Image (cartoon, rainbow, N blue to C red; front, side):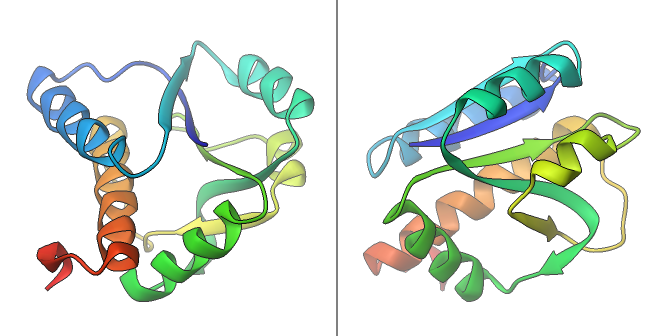
Length: 138
């Protein structure tokens, strides 16, 4: 299972509709779950209970190409559950950062919170289309 843990709900209805479309497409390949929290405490409680590979989205993390990201996901889901954590507009606190197995960056730019959730799920979808040999990536 892949979980996307995030602080706050998607507010923009157009972005939410696109997010849900990618979520629907992804769930044909693999179980993906979005879990929205009010604050970091909820995320901390959940990841402390889980035996999962924790990826935090952080501008100081490593950047991967879409092909590399696809290989990363394929490798990690073969071993255990995968959790992506998205902070709020202030990023993530040190306590969560210390629990991360990997820090993933989508570049130095700042994105709208709702938009970043959409970008992440689209990249996860792209990764699965690469794994499955589908034409979407081309």
